[in-house]
Image 1 (tube, rainbow, N blue to C red):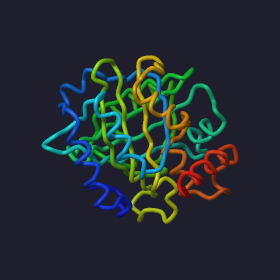
Image 2: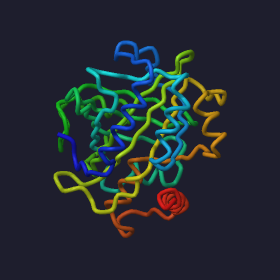
Image 3: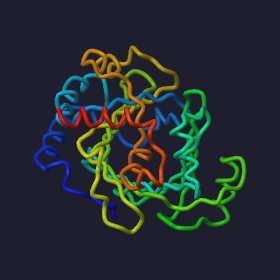
Length: 267
């Protein structure tokens, strides 16, 4: 089940994207493993969804696309966890150099779920994960041990939000580089309808994942030519701000990011 799916990305646009993606060389999950990049650098870019078809045309010669059973666009849903003090969110808000995200990610098309811990430190992302049964309110003994090992101690965690989105996954033809393109992002609380406020509903979030930053990447160069600069954006943080009030979450340091996203949306 995909959580909170709204008819945001019109069917006609989805069909346009599929036609564009058919021009790419398709690769399997096994071939995708040539760029696992669980330890990596990330560069994110945000732009309006209307720009995506043209961008796909321009990068098609340089990237392969993940395709499974004739599908190019895949549905994801993630359940995020934090403690009572929203430590993970607040660490991100304060730009703490070493910070974590804990989530269960479900790949809707394959019905596979993983408990993941993402550690961000000194500009690098290190992600570790184990299989799990799906969304939940409590962890079992094996999951608790995994979390304590990754987080460096005990933390009392609770579900704080769920988001869902669609993703296109591209791999550079000649280098160890993966490009994920996320859209149709919706946010909500556990077992409740999607929240009315959906800040990222018209935004494309493209994430360039590399062993180390290489600005000669075809996608990086294309973004530079289109005057789209790297932009630190977190689906988790924006989702939390969509769901919780300013009295529950301190988010003043994200004001400039929210203004920037609003500017893109109103183009």
